[in-house]
Amino acid sequence: MLSYQHSYHAGNFADVHKHLTLSLVLDSLNKKPKPWSYFETHAGTALYDLTAENATKTEEFKQGIALLQGLQLSSVFDSYLKVVQQLNTSTKPCDKYPGSPWFASQAARETDKISLMELHPGEYQQLKAVFHRNSAVAVHHRDGYEGVLSLLPPKPNRGLVLIDPSYEVKSEYLQVAKFIDKAYHRWSNGCFAIWYPLLKAGNHREMLRKIKLSGIRKVLQAEFYVKSAADERMYGSGMLLINPPWHLEQQLQQVSQSLYQHLADNSAAPPEIQWLVPE
Ligand SMILES: C[S@@+](CC[C@H](N)C(=O)[O-])C[C@H]1O[C@@H](n2cnc3c(N)ncnc32)[C@H](O)[C@@H]1O
Image 1 (tube, rainbow, N blue to C red):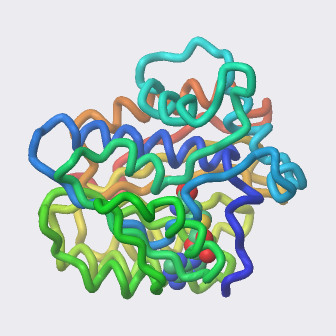
Image 2: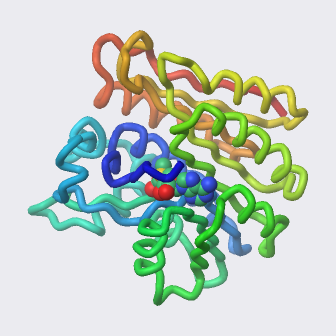
């Protein structure tokens, strides 16, 4: 199903949570000079205009990135905020918002490689246009699960796969679990970051259960809530990280506490970060 367009949701609280986590993983990969490979199964368009019709219709960014503007935040936010700020001017601090491929491209050094999958024809054309001059970024008009699997194990052999579907159909949760099972067995030293929505229906639980039963170890689960779990709308954002970098758990504790303070309403539970499966 390809009716989803991320431009309606860019910069919302879930994007902030997901992209902060992504920035921290990329920072950690950059601590060593050895090159890395980065993959996305569901890339989107990489750049979003928050003044355009789709974003202003939902105004979701007003409950996300806009709430962080002008705050004094700890240094764990630095890399994330730097990428957002570089797209904007000081007079218009929140007109443009970067998608996950943009964060990866900004972190990449000359030897790092990026491969992006996007199936929607219109979104693919936009994504391709963003990176047409960047030879380190390969943009594929292809199903993300099948496309990324065909490229694993990669060279360079360290790096990250981001899995960020829209979960418009319930079967997508199980599709992610199946993908992880296959992808991990091809690249067991890779880091895998899976985003999932927290909705009242709780369909993410079956995906977590399958991944837990798969035998894969070292799986960190980070959930952040903005509303009560009884709310009819998306009440939180989840990230599952297989083989997360050292210190990510502590960094996510810090980040999530700040997000809870600035983005959540009074009915929201505090963030939860735990090992779904330890080492
Ligand atoms: C949630 S958005 C991605 C947002 C992006 N990762 C970010 O954080 O900026 C999901 C994207 O996946 C695309 N998509 C849907 N099904 C796909 C599939 N099977 N393979 C690749 N892309 C797909 C949609 O067109 C949409 O652009």
